[in-house]
Length: 113
Image (tube, rainbow, N blue to C red; front, side, top):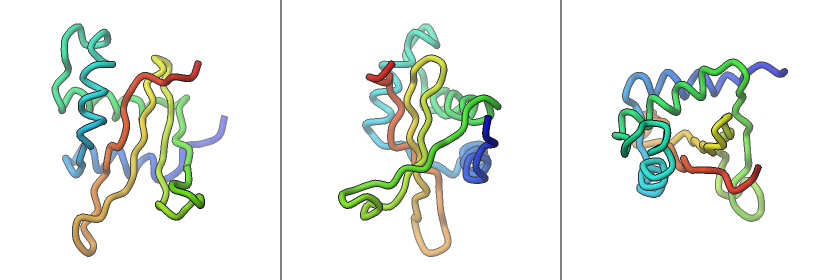
């Protein structure tokens, strides 16, 4: 097993510090697809805790993916699919010069096995 990329720990630190944004799609999909895990519709903070737990799991590593067409024209994102088949995609998002947050772009049940 390869070791997690340093970005993985950066995302954990940002999420734990509250330095994050969630896309409306990620929030909507996570509320739907994590309902079984929580037994009810999860709150935003529960969704973030779920993502943190996935990122600190030693058997899961984020994979860097180039975004856009041609690849890389839309920047890069980091993604993983956990043991529950929840697909998580994160990006670094610059709010202002030198102010970067973790951006949860996707958090939903993967269509792939």
